[in-house]
Length: 301
Image (cartoon, rainbow, N blue to C red):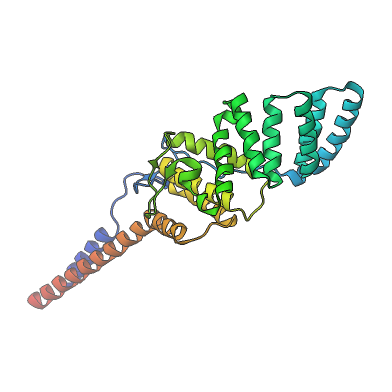
């Protein structure tokens, strides 16, 4: 009888500690509402952090391209070759020389979108933000759909730079307030939907990351905002990867730490808390079964 009671107690503990499993699902991502996504979910998206071009690696090829374009310009005198030469100078970081060529192109053939956009970009890289804004606004007038309709963000970046550090925030740059709580919220202020803002961030950051090294407060803010957008539209894992990029560009502060801590809780903390509670219940049940067996042994001894 004593052996049977011991087996009964052991069986009870095993049943409590090893609940039956139905089917296996991997935990691929965590949504902001705390729900999990597996890799076979049809709506699972894992957007990658934006990456610019590696212009240092491209430099040898661009130097050779300069020679070719110079030869073509001297023999054919086509403005396209002259413009290509200026653009290649910009890729090589020779911004003052590129500006001179784009200004000459504008004198020869004014009101061309490509020239206006290139002048705006090279003026910004030279730190002349007022002139940069003037040319980017002209480029938008000439071709409102340029850069897939995202040049409004380029113009907003220049306006914020001209207003100073206080204007480097999501409201002034994007027209959205992600709030200061642990979870970002999409409080839209400018009339653009969040998916349009997210696309503009992705596109403009790919362009900007090709030319702007860290640290940079504007890029840091844009990356942090893209992380907030990813958390709202995709999952917290995608957001955290872009937060890491924002940190590399100099973003810091309590809000970044608060959101990282909250995302960790969504991804890991609730499971840990559940496991602790479950272990406590198993322990109580085991103690109860032990007391029951001990009492039965005394009764039937």
